[in-house]
Length: 134
Image (cartoon, rainbow, N blue to C red; front, side, top):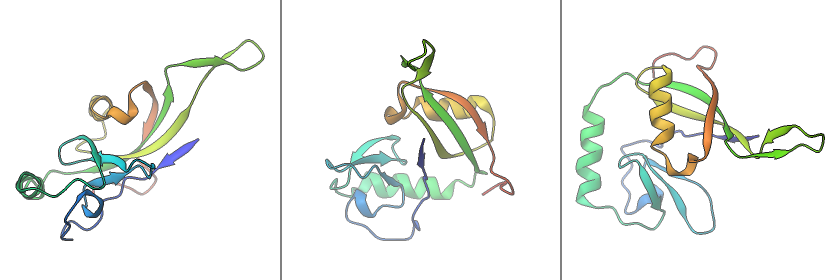
């Protein structure tokens, strides 16, 4: 099982490219790939900071929406034989996800919008013990 923690860096940090941005989730792959949580799309560590980045980040930081941390258990839709004739998922992982409300429709929408999670389905999600609004 793979665990991915998506914890933002301090937003006040100045950065010249994606690798230093608080909203960039680095996949630590050799090609420098990651996820931009500002534009909700894939990005590279070396991408330069732009005025679009600055204005979008300011807008995000101005919005004071409640946020909740949820853990989401995902499995691949693709299955393989376990050797005994039973189908088992090819891969499964648990990720941390920050959403406005801990409800299934928002979890599904957040997962569907991420290209790195295409082919996965939600098995379960929960709020970690002692966690509430962020």
